[in-house]
Image (cartoon, rainbow, N blue to C red):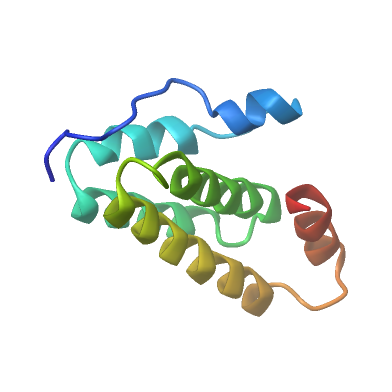
Length: 114
C-alpha cells in the first residue's frame, strides 16, 4: 500500500470530540500498521483480538478505533475505509459471540459505543 491518502494522527479525533479517555494504544498501533499495508493492519487486528478477547473494555475500544478509522478514510481512501469497516463489522459480531447477551459486558459495549 502506498502512503498516499493515509492520515497520520497521534490521537483519535473522535475520542477527543467525545471526551472518551483511551485505555489502549490501539489508535497508534493501527496508524503505524497503515504504513505497512493491509497485511500489517490485519496482523495488528488479529494480535489485538488474541490478546484481549476476554476484556470487554479493550474489545470495545478496539471496535471503536476500527469504526473511527473507517470514517477517517471515508472520503480520502475508499478501499482502506471499507477494509476498516469490514473489520469493525467482524469485531462487532465477535463481541456478541464472546459475551453473553444481557450481560454486564454487553451492556458496557452498547452503552460505550452508542
